[in-house]
Length: 96
Image (cartoon, rainbow, N blue to C red):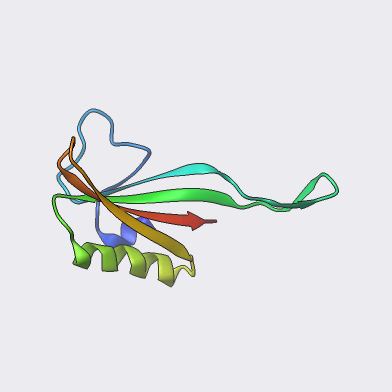
């Protein structure tokens, strides 16, 4: 799904040699399952999708949001500047 953006994508990290910016990283953060009577009836995994770029990149954000929306995935979004890395980060929180 995220590869539809045309951006490099990796689970958790790219290792020692990340690609040129911008790129996407995603990872599971835990679960929020629906359960009753000690049984999970509807498993849900929380994921974080992170877009990294040198500066605010609204066009790339639109690509990520379009990929999520096309797959009917609701998201919450936040953004921050990471001074130590000199990178801009946009975080999408999703559940699958």
